[in-house]
Length: 411
Image 1 (tube, helix red, strand yellow):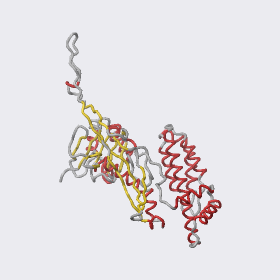
Image 2 (spheres, rainbow, N blue to C red):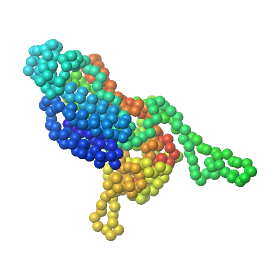
Image 3 (cartoon, helix red, strand yellow):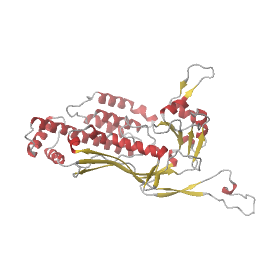
Image 4 (cartoon, rainbow, N blue to C red):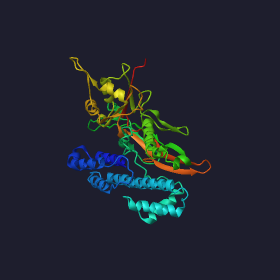
């Protein structure tokens, strides 16, 4: 559970504004030390109540109090995982030592004794309920997580921009969008002379329809793999949701999502310039910092924009050469964002090599479930336990001139 606690602490730290960190730095350092002192591999359940209480106390200092509940849910999930992991070890130990004594009552007593002697104190009635649950595969006891507000298992997931998107609710909607051109006289009221007839302003309003469809990742395990503790059991709880988040991010950036013949997620990367995206072709095979800067300048709310590219492309545009020559140096992502005048530079491995995507995340509207859920069903016809991470997703740009894409020169 050490890694899970480290992840929760990372989420807590991320919940504070930069200027607030100094005030809680001592508490953060103490928590890091306490978690680092926990064993890497637990042969017995570890008492983490003191650590989790401290994490809760730290989270309560958030300026945004809505974040406290998410941390409490994470800790509740951690406690559940601890109980189940220790119970599984006791069960395996009992069956190894008593192959002919697998009756419900004897195992229940053995399991209760194991918890009584272990670090976790568990009531006898709760132990009985847990034993009963072993006889049937049930839905995973994991709360749905907010896709747009947090990253699950941060040490394994890609850096995310999902938390900054404009979430518009679960229902399909049509968004009215103003296409305003400052230099178009027809879009500005005119005729300011006294006692003369005034001209009407002629606003240009267009609409963007957002409709969601199913986005899912599914993995079925055999009964044997389930009971023998296959590594895929943990994979379904940890990596599978991360792959779901990766797929959603990739759909928004480049790949899109189409279900039942309807495009649900319209990608930012497009073939040609339109009212929402400016497409720029670089002079060479790799975009330069100047070309990325020029593209970023086409985004109306540039100061809110994210610049997204894969690692090698970010490295290429980050290189800075001195006029006098010498060894080149590279901007950090924070320095690069400051040079470009944007909010953030984000690395994403799914962006095509030498492509740079720049967009204002508040200009990308998203509909559907604000997160995913984990569904489970045991199919006795094939002796397979089916687990599906699923959510509804749909999205498109809803602000004119809110994005730009830089592509390499065509060979």
